Image 1 (cartoon, protein in one colour):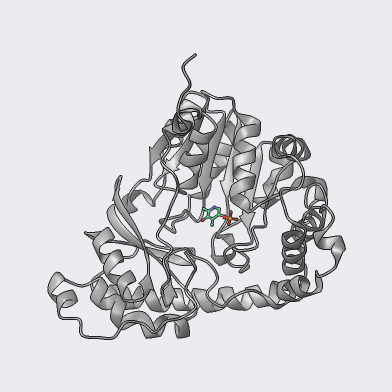
Image 2 (cartoon, helix red, strand yellow):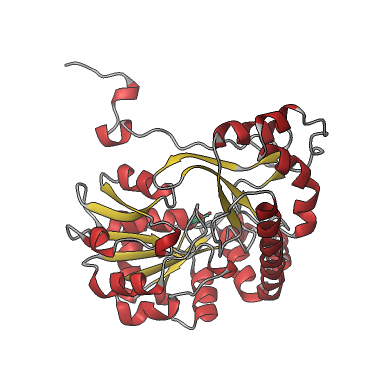
Length: 376
Ligand SMILES: *Cc1c(COP(=O)(O)O)cnc(C)c1O
């Protein structure tokens, strides 16, 4: 009997995957991950403080995140049975993939888009197929025929799309809803910041899963509480593949409190971000940059040597997310947008980072002061 070493015991499809990592070293201002730059909303914080009894920690939570299901149902005018929860929306997406496709099936998606999708496709043995984002002359649309070719078991769209911030045009989404043969995952992680929502279509569609998140506008990325909305039959199927207890009792309480009682806090944050989005777009254009039209809380700025620039900025306390050699876009930086008062102290540094090599070499400014940043 030949006994393989530990690194070769895994499934071949999993061994071939590169472990997901992003640079999360400490920075004074982190504009790399689109989380809430004001922090965590007050009712969620209170719910966490109140959750100190043994009933929260010594006992198991509800099977399927029932309090969050009820809160989300109320917020969107649906039934709790039409909401599925998970350990972040990433988990909901992965469970949906596992529930609706067999290994070898195709997952069809727009590209560039959310990087976790090809990752989850591969961990589940699926074959990701990419349809390139069209340029500005075609309104950042996509070829729906190409997307639906070969009858994909799962079709994924993200609108506003990460990392571009652009909307998928309504006509394309409608066509996908009308013609897709399998599950349609529509990721609305950034819908609070702009663009239409399609939540009102989940019941009639029967194959549409609208994914939302509490990690961006709702300021709860660290709590890991996500949810999605879909017809009952979809939700039941995903919950079977998901299994019980994926949402901690603490996350369930914080997420439910935020959805029930922090709406005004979130709305005022979104208003601030949208105002800052206008100002930052103008600021970038004045400096000769052309951010893609964004409905989200970030800009994608096409620029050469994105990785080098991001590393240079990070050394000086500013985190932005580099992308290299994206089809149709090339290199670029994704820069999160927060309230203007948060962005303003970083603008001089950002200007140098986006500037010429000479400008960077001549940069004499101080690094941004040590802030909270993010732990590794
Ligand atoms: C951040 C994000 C999510 C959700 O992340 P969770 O923290 O797992 O809820 C989902 N989709 C996109 C496109 C995102 O950017």
